[in-house]
Length: 172
Image (cartoon, rainbow, N blue to C red):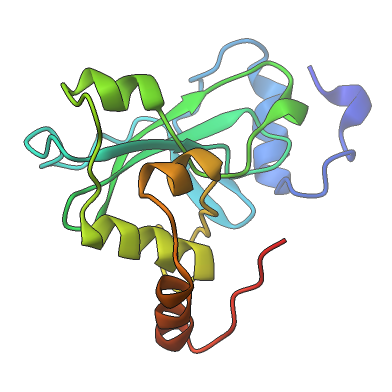
């Protein structure tokens, strides 16, 4: 499958590269593997307790550049992060999106005409932006749709987060 490009992607662990080469089109041949030192379990069940929180924010990210694997999580109304699923995505991993985005269709399907984020959700997004908050050690950089979902981030919000994180936040 990837034999001709075996050493092309420096982000892959040898274990994961061997896994990709061995699996062909059979996506779930091996349920667990390591990529960039992070253990992935494709068969992991969603965290308990997310279904009751109708003000949750459904998010997705492709955390490993060059690998068509999507992480789906929720930002709960209390600001906590809950795991939802790992899912194999696009066939061309060059089109991965390395930013945490909102599944906007799903957000409105929860019955919201307008979504109203909680202060805790906004604080979590700020914590993700500053990298003070990670999910199981992975940095999840918020994308535009997530930043839009929690509302405008003010200079006061950013200054408060910089104080909590103990470092300046740089925006491009």
